[in-house]
Length: 163
View 1: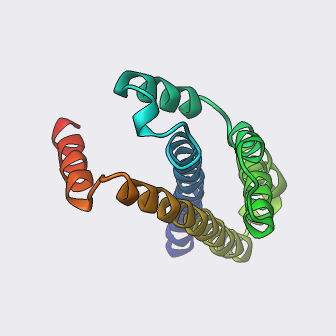
View 2: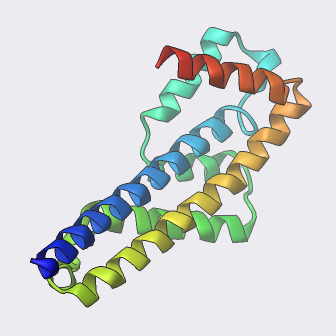
């Protein structure tokens, strides 16, 4: 019975770590969309709020691959960021389309599940680091355009209240 409980807990942990990794990939996608509509977009003085919202929504429906392609076409991005985004796209696609199929054998053993948990945590951390790097660029853009931390915090609080 104890072995079954351990197995159940590990299985739940694998699924939880997978969920976290996919969530972090989605955060990266959203942050890249925000970056494309701010730092690499037309700028707040060149469009109305409605036009900005439309631009942002148009990016929100794009895949990570499409967003990266759009970024490449918009600006010259540093080689290190280019390679990181290329790796992120590969990891995201592999995770979403192949991960459990390729890991089916490992998923059946305690040792394999432990490896999967560590691997998934590493992937989640990888996506989170890139998301933070892009967030910093967006945050600097916001500061340059008078969008204060206080204003962002108010919007976040409103978002939470309305949830």
